[in-house]
Amino acid sequence: VRMLGLFSLMAIFLTACGKENLTALAPKGYSAERSFEVIIISILVMTIVFVVVMAIFTYVLIKYRRKKGQEDYVPEQIEGNKTLEIVWTIIPILLLVIIAVPTIATTYDLADESQKDDSINVNVTGKQFWWNFDYVNEGIQTSQDLYIPVDTRVYLNMISGDVIHSFWVPTLAGKMDVNPENENVMYIEAYEEGVYWGKCAEFCGDSHSLMDFKIVVVSQEEYDQWIENMGTPMEEEPATASAQEGKALFEQSCLSCHATDGATTAPAIGPNLTNFGNRTMIAGVLEHNKEELVEWIVDPASKKPGNGMLNAPYLQEGISTEDAEKIADYLLELKSTEVVPEFEPFE
Ligand code: CUA
Image (cartoon, rainbow, N blue to C red; front, side, top):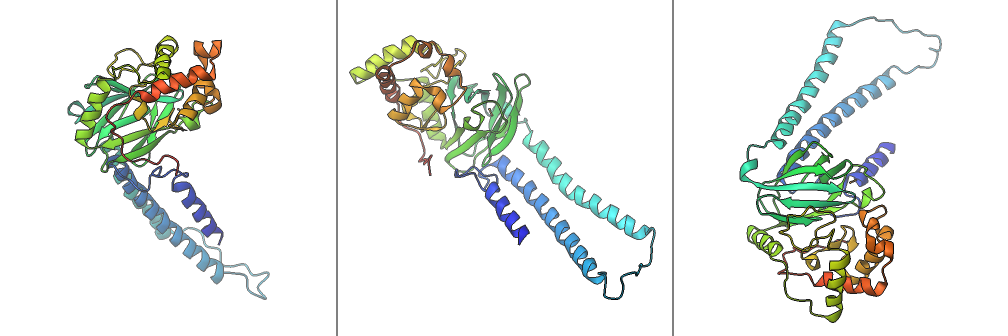
């Protein structure tokens, strides 16, 4: 009964922490599938060992228990058994080989860079507490939502802008450390269109647990459309007077850190906000609506403690809710042809 309790507890931990598709047990991509196979082999071997050991243990426990009238009985004392020792040395070696061969093969397979030059390459930068995605050949930058085409290999060249983070999208691939100096490379290839949840998997500060991101897998046509949209941000003036004032405020207080042009080559100090109106979430963790956005602009510490926006000059000077509402109106108007698969972030 205790074991049953333990297993059900394990099952709860293993199957996503409340968010759908945050699990390594339902792979939807090449890397995750290869890792899953290794997980299954390891669990099978461990289960066999567990069952056999427990069976022998139970048998011995019952057969050689102390019987009535045998209180002072000392059983025959045996020392050494060559056959037995050889058997119990060889069996573990075989079991380790069964686990090691596919593990090593998979490790090399997932580190394969032979297709890197012919694939989409994205430079990924982890920062407290958000992700920057720089599409090397397309000349496009974005943050938080990584768009990739389905059934296509995409190489991620990962580096950190501050402390160590870890890139983890359990359903597709991962996890891999993102270090400040040496670049780590991994590739992902998704089999199904959809939105896949990603998390930072290395403790990196106050809001480590909120350093979420998403991988948006779309068709090749939608991907091309998305790249085009990102390179040609909205040029017409905002529709409402409030958004027009918001634009002016944004340019004065926010544009030095947040670009609204995906084709910019300027270094990303804060997340790139091109076509922000098309996003599915704010800062990776908040619902995408005006109310949340205003609260975020006025008091980002309440939503994501320790984040870089707290140093922004506009906050030091203090910002009124009215001004924040105008900026929110402007940002939510930054839209283009929507390329977002259906996504329910708060199930
Ligand atoms: Cu970044 Cu934890």
